[in-house]
Structure formats: structure tokens, C-alpha cells
Image 1 (cartoon, rainbow, N blue to C red):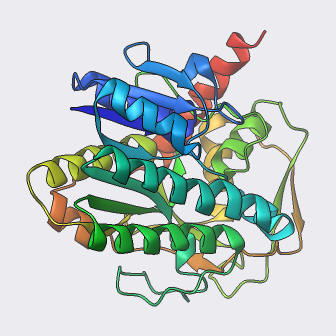
Image 2 (tube, one colour; image 1 turned 30 degrees about the horizontal axis):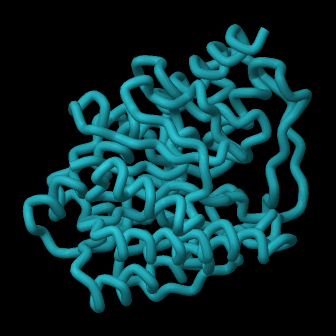
Amino acid sequence: MTVLVTGGGGYIGSHMALRLGDAGEPTVVLDNFTTGFDWAVDHRATLVTGDAGDMEFVGGLIAEHGITEIIHFAGSIVVPESVTDPLKYYRNNTATSRNLLEAAVKGGVQRFIFSSTAAVYGMTGLAPVEETTPLSPMSPYGRSKLMTEWMLADVAAAHPIKYGVLRYFNVAGADPKGRSGQSTPLATHLIKVAAQTALGQRPKMDIFGTDYPTPDGTCVRDYIHVTDLIEAHKLLLDHLRAGGESTTLNCAYGQGYSVRQVVDTVKAVSGVDFRVDEGPRRAGDPASITATGEKVRQQLGWVPQHADLREMVQTALDWERYLQRRNR
């Protein structure tokens, strides 16, 4: 069995390739390196440069490497950009996933794991969401991901392929062994932006919206360490291999932090009181998204090992320092 990891040069995909390599799994990484980096790909994986939406190309990879499983990370992820350039998101996320799925079906791929998002829920209020919470995405990004979830369910009903969907909340931190992290210089992840500001790579950072119906007026999110998230993928792969049914799971700790709380934690861990400006809300941002995370624990036996905001911040800061040294 060989696993194809799309977007394996990116933040989360590179961690997946590391986890598969640690388990001795034959792995092929496919990335077009629009936002990812070839140096971030685990040396134990076979690296291929190409487009996950190129059906003929992917079909050749499936046949050449005997790929039986696909873990699909490739896509665009910036919510505000999806509002101003929706067609990019429907191309990179929805259309690419559709073509990848067709190549998978034609190539006899048995299992497909999809990187989805909490953005499929939209405005949820302050209560933690469950997998049964109504889906009402507020942005083209969220809708582009939800469309892929629907396609997966339809394809699995018509063809002999099992699937797993993991709806991510806010992914943060870096590999505790220092092997990978969030490397995109202009990434919009809050903890990365705050870490870069603390280390002097940005003159300041902005808080978008201070009038939300939350305890301190700023958005609340459920942050998850990338290493715990990747372990959920590995457990989901094992679940499907053991004959488990297709499933959709939220991947979260069940603990929300506001933007102000995150910024204050980065200041405390870094020891730097950096400049923070407050501005208006961004389009497409719900006030709060958190989840119980109960189903993923029960169904997969997932036990988070890094559910500490200070640890997430510390590993993010350590990775930024590594990038500073590497890029000199």
C-alpha cells in the first residue's frame, strides 16, 4: 500500500508526510509548490511536482506507484481572499478535488481522506459545534470545502471507495522535533503572524474586529496543535484500513481562545510587548467557532498530547527562529 499526500510541501501536508515516514509507510508527495516548499518534504517520501487536479497525470502516478490511499491537503485557505476571488477557490479547492476523485476512482484507490474545515459551519453562536450542527458556510472558502465533502459522499455511494473527512479548527504550532512548521512568509494564521511580530519580522499586527458578541469582543477559535491533528489523520487511516465505515469528524480540543488571549500568550511566551492595532471586522469571519471534539475521541481513540496554548506558541516561535536562521 502506498499513500499519496497532495499538498505535502505545505504546512499540514509536510507534517503528514513526516508521520507516515515515521510509521514506515511508502509515501508519494504531490505538490505544485504554489505555496509549499520542496525542502519541507520528508526525505523518505517520493516527491513529485505537479497539479492534483490533472487527472491524467494523477492517474499515471496511481498506476506507477501502486497508490491505494490518498490524503488530500492541496488547496487555497485564506478566507478573506476567497471573498474577493471566489473563482480561485472553486478552481483550486472544488474543481481540483473533483478531478482528483475521478482519477482515484478510475485508478482503484480504496481510501480517501479529505482536509476540510470548521468554516463549513458558518455563524454558529458561542456554543461548541458537533458534526450534526447545521452547515451554513459564510465564505466561498467554506462553501468550496463543503462541496468536496458532498462529492465524496456521492462518489462513495456509487463506487467502492471509503472516505474520511476531518474538519479542522485553527491549526497551530510546529513539529516538536523541529522538522517542519508553517513556512509561508505571508501566512495569515494568527499565531504565526503574532510570532513573526514578536520576532521583529513584522512592524505590527492587527486585530480585525473588537465588537463581536464574545467575552472580550474579539473572535474566538478552537486552536489545535498540528502534531495532534496529524495523529488524528493516521488514526483515521487505520480506522478505514480496518474496515471502518466512512466518517466525518471535527478535529478540535473543545477549548476556545479569543484573539486577544492568543496575542497576550504570544507576548508572555516571547517576552516581547509588540505593537497591536485594532481595526474593523474582516468579511467572512464568524464570531466564534469551537467544537466538542467528542466524536473523534470516541470513534478513533484520539488522545491529544499537545493541547496547551503555550506549547503551541512556543513551537511556533521556535520554528520562526529556525526560518530566520535558514533564510539568512
